[in-house]
Length: 187
Image (cartoon, rainbow, N blue to C red):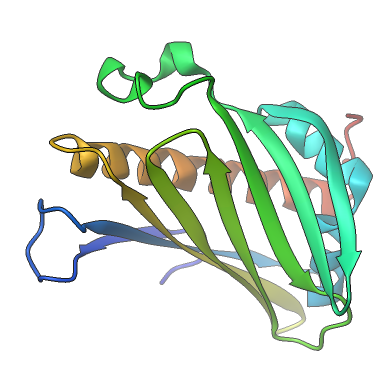
């Protein structure tokens, strides 16, 4: 996959699209000149996370919790419900989502973590992060799945969700690159 490209595919347990049980998968890959340790430090930095939240719909302060050999990063985000198509809006309740990123405390590259997004909605979103050394820098690969449990609109809602998540991931990765290059905007 070319750097910065997002791919999407659809699969289900019966091998037929458009049926109950359909899941949308996506992947995104981004390169950085910094080593994996710098990226992991950034994704755990409260100031960076606050600035990221301020730029991309974050609500409240990010929470960073060390649990044994893991570090959990919790962030909350408000979906702009007024900009969501009507066929999806009724399923979003108040539009509040919580993302939990789970990273190893003291990893060696490749660094592997996971993420989940939850909220008051009939959907599941989860995936993985991988940060690996490449050349003199690193590559971040994000993979995810989206499943919407809503009769008749599930496939359309999944496609819309993946499209919007993919845009958000790209913008967040660009923001991270800018911050790593020294442009650290205030929260």
